[in-house]
Length: 336
Image (cartoon, rainbow, N blue to C red):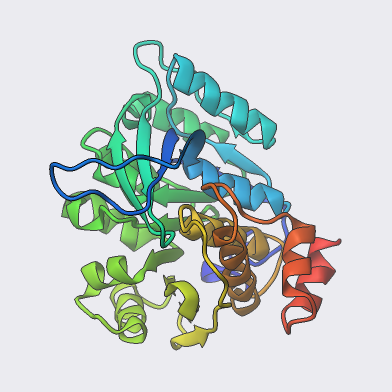
């Protein structure tokens, strides 16, 4: 795949581009509960942990499959900001912006129930205070062939949304843009969302988000309708959990890529593992079909582990596939 308008360095060409995440990396307080309590009720958590989450999960998933990653979002000064920076450094992820002195990084309470489903409540911090000066610094740090990943969370924030929309509109043509609209997609102002949709090269959403964007309940119909809305220069992924993923390559037709059924213990971060793996595999030069198959396997692997940042390493992904059709193609690039 040569990318939009045949621009060198587009996704699918192994050019050494990086994943540059202009989003939110926060701290997750993960509480494992048998079920969510009724309104006004209470429930005792069987296990509670602090972990870095948000966009960190996408970057970590990509890094573990060999793609360089850069965090170009805002971060704060305080215990949560310190934790975020330590975890970014541990994964080998570069940080572009200096810490904001006036606020700490925000946090999210994630409830994981007995069926592995997760429910969130988020407290915003420094990551929601992106400025035009920050955007200028991000633009200056970009390299040819980089992929910029944008999250709908940031677009929904009152301060970040307009800054991000303006940033995306100013990106050079050789920069690839990937959008994950997220669960707040119906809360993103139209004047913020539309410029990003017009510029993105790939969009990846789950079934609920696809329904909100298109009004279609059927995942195939939603994927096709979203592709028609965005035009032939944009590829679409519609994630359908254990059922796999609907892929619409730029200018192509909707294809169903089967998933892999596993016993899920924690679905927190599964979509992020899918996104990070898809981007890493495209960055290694694989075609979208093979990249989606690898991403489906990475997401299936992730839900069999506790924690939000549980994407597989290269060896773990190949062992997990163990002779399945995409394994040989993945092995040839992941083992180098």
